[in-house]
Length: 116
Length: 253
Image (tube, rainbow over all chains, first blue to last red; front, side, top):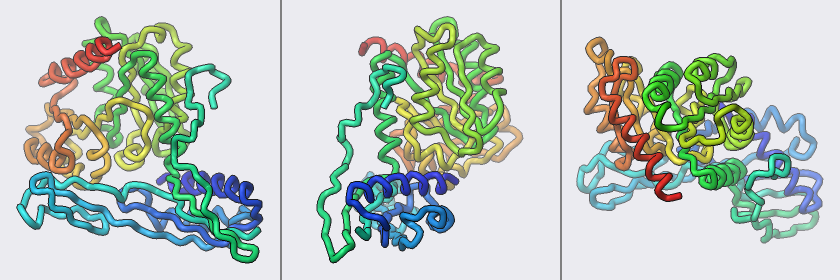
């Protein structure tokens, strides 16, 4: 629901980064969007597409999205299971149902390619 | 960042990951590794809020739930029962209207309303400004317990740290017991889970032990309570919980 404002925040950061690198155009940027970040990827992409049209710096930029996994660690036996986000019903090893998610909850600007 | 109000705000000390180094030049294009969270600005402001609340010796709660779970009613009854022994202040968050703040103001405690004008959650910067507005309200100079009532929404508020000490997620009986499974982040990021409107249990299919188990499977550290604000059944455990929080904060000061 707040993806538009997150994209606006991203663009502010990109303007700062472009200034620091004396760049006039962003060609490509890589965002890591965690499955548990509360960010809907389609909405983020949509917001990016709409707002980039109004911004000369990012108008032609390609948005690359990477999705990191979530690791669910069993609180009983410590067994960890990597998933695309979904929480396993129970631990594969000991059948415990208390699984603690680790990672996959952030929204990170990883890399920017710019033209100077 | 906060020269205007003179509070002890975050001085932008670059404690977050902020190196813009490591660039590779290729002809006229440059690739820069940033690796910075888009939530970093909010998180930095939230840390500064928390430091400010610590300096003031205030315990801060962030209430999150769906619309209509009974956050404002919980607050009204809490103020009625505890208002004489604990100085409570309230920041109300809603998309529109002053209605919730008016309900709380009628109970005689300092309150301000934040209207987000469409935004689905409160953020740390709104709380920073809101707290300064609250400090201008009569009676706000000795607040022990600040309660922030977030915008009714179980999704977005879970992502935004406001600088609170305790995040509290509410689910009311008519909403059904499957909220933890559907909205996990609200439960994994909270410290307390309240099941409210338990006076309606005879009329709804809401197995309390199952709802508790689902939430505790996600987050075993949750403190779970169930009660009815309106009938008062089970409400004492909540009041005692708040008394303990405030007492411990004062003892630590």
